[in-house]
Image (cartoon, rainbow, N blue to C red; front, top):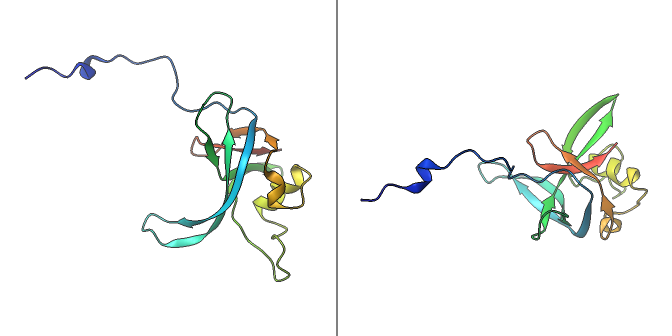
Length: 127
């Protein structure tokens, strides 16, 4: 039996995560989100984006923004009020206002800055 060469692999100098940069939103969809037990927990807006350092598109469904003088992270949860308008206090509404947009559809084709979210994934930067 031969020894697995991977056992002698050294520690590299390159990261495997993407650095925060400006991305272009290629498409936008509303998807059902599930918890760890596969139970439906709501709907999220997912933006498929072109990152300058990656050939394959990346999905972004979160935003970091300022709330009460602190930076907070939230998913782009799709919530509406009784008038069938996007919830005014939602993170999604914060992102749209930051980008001077009125609708989710307006995100397509936009170039948006990113930053790292709480778990190290790329999220939109709205501050």
